Image (cartoon, one colour):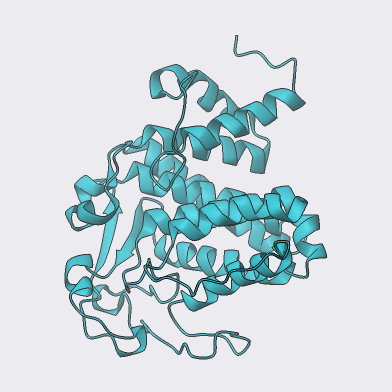
Length: 308
């Protein structure tokens, strides 16, 4: 069903931000209830929220947390999503999560709305994009991470009671992170499409930050885990940054319609990789499979396009 198809994209988002705990197994011969699965998948993101929680928070056992994030560095980094079962805010998987949530909303928005979950989908996306905007403090400065995975994993406690380090980490032109900022650009571009009809001003803001971050990642190239060594044991950039730059360019083209972004992706496809390869992975680290899907969809709708 269309709702089941929407869940495929949502599942990728959930897995990118997956907690390390098992739900109780339920055995049933009944047909799968995809509406309920969609509802609970979106509810999961509310449980992962960091920052000051809104009045309409449905996961009532959660409270405000991480409300001083960024204070030590003089920036406001309150908000975003916690990663897995810990309290670190890792930028790369968080950005990929928002990209996938947005992609699901773009492709299956009518079906999500028919299931009564459109508003919750927008809230889940916006909770991430609001944080990305905060973290983008200057055109070529982005704060992708709060917390240290090593110390955090040794301390089992509620996020509301955190006593571990909330140190914030940044990338800039001297310490680049092309993979990270390009994925964030993709997330913002995809989200701008989602909000274009209901909140055009917000959509414009998202696109502005997305284009700046793409320029940042392309102009000052480098893997983010070289600039932020603390992330290597958790989300090392194995695939490098080239797939994210292509991925971001395609999303920016889809969001803006500007030929320059499409030309970027086409002209650099051979040297950046992923063309004609058999892909066995699509994840927070490797984007080539998703890129191939976007390219295929574009080619099908623009049969006459040529790279020459």
